[in-house]
Structure formats: C-alpha cells, structure tokens
Image 1 (cartoon, rainbow, N blue to C red):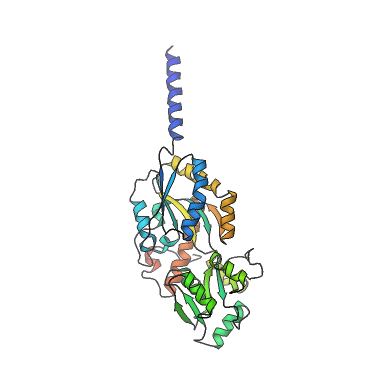
Image 2: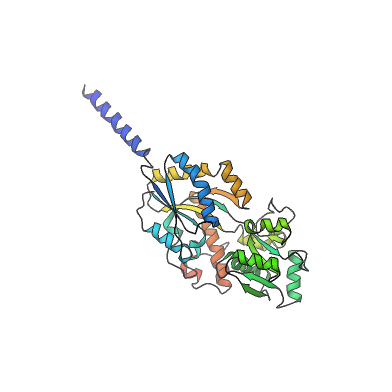
Length: 334
C-alpha cells in the first residue's frame, strides 16, 4: 500500500509540475510598442501579434509608448518584472543609444524572442538625374564637387548610416547635405527636385519607384532584391561593402533577461509560427521588408554585427558622442 501511495503522490507531483509548465500565459500580456501608431514598427507588431495570440491561447494588449528615440519604452519594460508578461516591441535604435549618448541601456538587458524582419536600404535619385548608375553618380560627384544634394534625416538615421557607409568605402563625398524631419518629407523633396539623391528604406520608396517618380541606383545588401531585379546590389560595385552588410532597420520582440524559460519558449514558438501566417507574409512582401524570423543566439549575433557596423560608421563619420572602443564594441570584421 505504501508503494502505491508514494507512486500516486509522485504521479500527482509530476502532473502538477507539468500543469505549471503549461500554465503560461496565465494572465494578460502587455506589449509595449516603442514607436507611435501607424509607423512601421506599430504596423508590423499589430500584424503579427494576433496570430501569436491564437497560438499562445492568451491575450496581448498592445500600447504605444513613444519618446526619447524609443528609450522611454525600453526603460519602462526594463524596470518591470522579468516574468514574461511585459514585451518590448521595438526596432533597432537601442543598439546605438550608448555610442550616440542617448542612454546607458540597450538590448543587452533583453532576450530576443524574435527578430521578425528587416528593411533593405537603397539609394534613389530623381528620375531626370544625369547619372544612369551608382558608378556614374560617384564619378559625377568627383567631377562636380559641392553640387549634388543628398537628403539627410539626422545622426543615427538610415540616411546617415548609408552615407557613412558610402564614404567609408568610396572616400569623402563632396556633396551638399540637406536635412529633413524624416524619410517622408525627404522623399517628397526628391520627387520635387529639391534634392538629387536620398538613401531610403526599400519599403518607403518602392511605390514611388514603380510610379516612375524616383529611380533606384543601388540596393545596399549582399545580393539583388527580387522586387528590383534590375538594380545592382552595392557589392557589385565594390566588394568592400560586404564588410557592413546585411544591414538595415529591424523589428523585434524582447523580454527582460531572467524571464522564466517556459515563458521564453512559449513566446518564441508562438511568434516563430506567427511569422509564417499568410497575412503577415503578405504584409512583409507589400512593405518591402525581408523576413528574418530568428531568435536566441542567431538573433544576438545579428544584433551584435548590426551594432558594430552602425557604431563604427557613426564614429568614423564624426557623428558619435562616445568612442565604440571605450564601450567594448568591436570594429566590423574583428
């Protein structure tokens, strides 16, 4: 009888343990979106999360928390309990907070549940520009110093990083940098002829390219993009660009370090499966993004490479506040 009772207790114990392991989520999950309503991060998160909810069997209540280039949202989640019930739904910006002097925290305090997708940078020009290719543009700049007008959106933004990448490979560009408050106004200015060239993300420019109001010169990636098969990848112009690529804005879901393994596993599985939903894939395709769907060590390696590339490009362009070496950020390729 004693053995029977002990066996029953052990079975009950295992059953309880199994039930606890399967109990996540036991309550509502908060999803803190790092940027405002209607922006790319918001659109991506609100597109993928309902499919993850269905897999989790729980509810994720999303809230936009803006300010300080995303730092307010990051700090908020970093200060909550590491229990899996508060998600940071963010983009790439925290990876350059320290080098740009914007804050002391970054994604090193978080576990990457899923890096969902990334944008692809491209260089576009006005359709009536006298250069027919990227190489022609570089030759024109050399022959006509101080003439070509480049759109810019400030230090740390995609245009500044792409421009720094160009100058790292090609040498100093003797051009006029014209500042704008965001990609949208800059691309509008390009179409109106106020500027000549603009580094942009493919998703923001693709419809204008299709409409013929701007022309692509190069895709900043390791290979041509299927959406622009006739536009060369920049590595075709110079293999030296490969040191910095792939690079581009990305979207990810994070939880605090120390979150229980069962919660991390459940979230990782749910969002990995959610990225394969046809509706989400259609959104990614339509917006010109590249699906990533990576987590764990693979995601950490990607973010480390992204941080290295961006931090050193900003530093060497004279746009950083802190030296990446002092922050323990290695140069690309080291």
